[in-house]
Length: 306
Ligand SMILES: NC(=O)c1ccc[n+]([C@@H]2O[C@H](COP(=O)([O-])OP(=O)(O)OC[C@H]3O[C@@H](n4cnc5c(N)ncnc54)[C@H](OP(=O)(O)O)[C@@H]3O)[C@@H](O)[C@H]2O)c1
Image: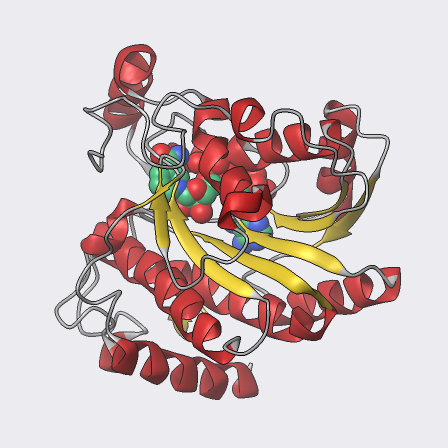
């Protein structure tokens, strides 16, 4: 299957480019399931919230503030949900979220790490680290490692990465430039953060060996959402103009994360990378277990200090 979807047929899973979040969850009764979802209030996260609650699941819906999460639940008429605050760039907020989720006493069937930011035009630091790396990777690292024990025996961790993971600084992760002081490019730093999402899933998958738990990453497709908010106006207008013809709709964009989090056929797949609800190859750096191990150790070191 074509990575960017020029071939719009169906893959081995029976789903493909055009499949929507409704298609990949069709007929499922998820009323005994609980999912934690970050970035629930916008784009493909909001659609994931819509479809999983419509199938009966209880969603612990995380947004930067509890108000935003509550509004999102309200907007999809979810009868069944718990709003929680999780500002991923603030470790104290993420740790408070971990506690709030623990206090629900609910076992998690999946954690969907969907929230993200893209291509900040200027170097922005948070706790001394580049903002995209800190938000997209470190924030989710704190969240997931804090909640591993709350995952069910067959619990799934789903990292929303991007094909942008192929566009990274030399070496994949620039460990000696995580603060951007030796040079910054909005896109390669986005790529570095998205590569980190995959490496995290790969290392977690190794740690889950011998259990029924899984960890995978995915590319959702290219979708016109609020993610482009940091692109300049010309790029944003161009993106909006082509969206009808060349981009996925939001329910098509949400399909792959719903498939990986929920579909029985994905229950035992782990350490993999998906696009269009099918497994696809990942980059050389993403397959590098030594890099994944090094990133995990560096992340632990960072987290111990912030
Ligand atoms: N759209 C695409 O073409 C595309 C392609 C490849 C990968 N992706 C990935 O798909 C995921 C979802 O993106 P989207 O397209 O749905 O974009 P979106 O509409 O901008 O949604 C992003 C979500 O992340 C949240 N978020 C951003 N920074 C946060 C922070 N510091 N703490 C907590 N939440 C934060 C946003 O909250 P606020 O609304 O409060 O800012 C929003 O809910 C991202 O991980 C993105 O990298 C998207």
